[in-house]
Length: 44
Image (cartoon, helix red, strand yellow):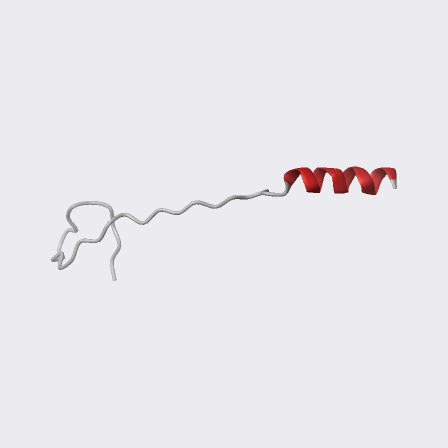
């Protein structure tokens, strides 16, 4: 399986076109919780 975003692939026949796949991720959703946990660790 060859995956590409170009319209042609040299020496190959394209049999099927698929849409572009995208994704998103939320990193650090609990950032305030993590910050206060760090402060709590320092203060005690």
